[in-house]
Amino acid sequence: MKNKPFLLLLPLLLLSSCSQKIEFPITDDPDLIYLSRNGDNYKTTANTAHNLVKESNPTSLVAAINEGDSVFVFTHQIFCSSCKAVDAAFSAFLRDSMAMCYGVYNASREDTNITKTMEALKKNFPAMADVIGDNYYTPSFYLIKDKENIVSVTLSDEETKDANKLEERFKGLANYTGIYEFTTASAFLDFVTNNDCFYLFDDVVGVKSTFQKNVYKYALHSNKVTARVRYSSLSADDKALIASRLGNGSATLFGTYSQGTPTINNYKDNQKGLDEAIETYYSVKIEDSSSSASSTSSESAS
Image (tube, rainbow, N blue to C red; front, side, top):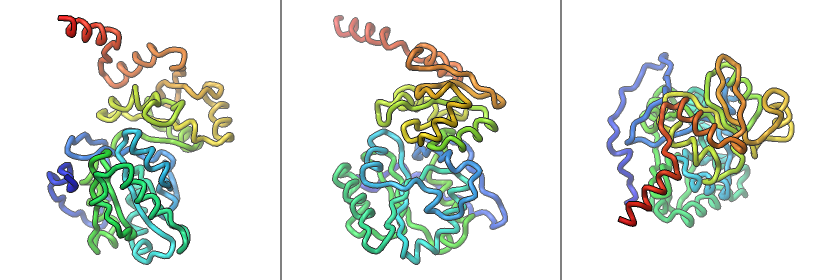
């Protein structure tokens, strides 16, 4: 099934007037995909889509989908007049929503990044093949819920030219979560100075990351703010800057910020403390894995 049902249930939203600022609050609608926010765009002054998306390639985009996150993909290229036509409206959307969007970009006429990336998606996730097709037109927008569910979004001429109408369209297609991802120290430190949140430094990338295993499923459905620092993606200067302000540079820190003041813990040495912090912050109960295993074994034996 290639035309995915999670968007078919959406009602059409009334378009707002051009003067109305569109808000993107945290939502939790099970019929919609869940998008993280690009924390690196916090208070950004960038005004082109190329500088507001997370530029990607076949390896990194396949890895992001395998990690388990929903993924928003935008394909564009340097000599594309249609890309230029939508740039102002789409850039406004990326700044206002701070949606994490993966850009697949051809930097020249000879560049084959778009073709290689789309071919990699179809090879690794066959269920996407029919929706992606064989003609990689730009600009293209894809909402990828998981390995099996993908939707291509086509914009009207009005939505291409009018930022408010484009924003209303994309607002109705996704949940904008309270998860903010950071790969730069300055954006993270500025953000936590002004926003109370739970924060965690990811020690590894992928499905085995501590964030993905322990935090994501609770942060996804919470109206509270979460700051995820992709520590392995920080530059050496970024790591040094964070070390001067927080925890002496450990890659496995977690805690909360309240009015700019952090608690500092290390989950490498204190897994129980991480579980307790998650329970307290997200108001959830984490089932003890040993108790669960014992219960399963008893049921099997009986």
